[in-house]
Length: 318
Image (cartoon, rainbow, N blue to C red):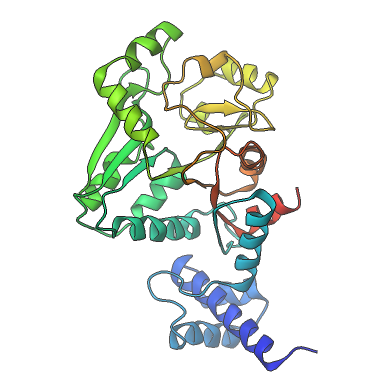
């Protein structure tokens, strides 16, 4: 038999979920009613309750109990130092808005520190969505450094490099990596990384107080192939070698071990290390990425995770 306290928690959870669907995911009240399995009038009351109880401001300001439980479960199962779980929109399970807002809130808190910080960033769609959620700030005391190159092999800018975009929003010193994501050969990679500017950036990345990365899947729908960094033949070779995921273009297997040779010989990113001593937080969501996230967790390539309910449930039931 549920207590009055349990009923109140459930009511606020429903209101917070309705508020998130309305104000963050942009659903209509009819859509909210359908997704929550309630009448339109009840959906309207729940949205109003979310406002009156101050659960919703610009960002969701109520940790939904189920999300908290999932975050706690992931932290315990994988020994994570930090974990946040956003609600999942049933009609858009791969939507990035929820995790982007959570990650932006975490980064904003770091940026508000008067003590100088070094923030290292990977690349990808999730990180770009996160940066878009950051408010305009003035943070000249901090340094933002890229973990990987900001150029395609032909010299064009990579589409999802976020260091410059973030620096513009928060007015911080920034250090983009003036390299292609992949060198054309091992010899070229060694030559490029011997440049003084590149050496300094790699050292800054090593010293970072906190690192945020995306996680990519390997296969026909891999970002590395879709965005033109590797060929179909190279992707097939990575799959044959056991590759399931990548972080900053370093490809790893199901146990989170880096693949020997292949594109890993030519990737010009900062070294991806297991069991990092400082926070390395992945921002990743979606069924396509579950295997890759799981591998990164197994190999302790990350010690923090920001994801959504559906992905978190898949990871816990893996």
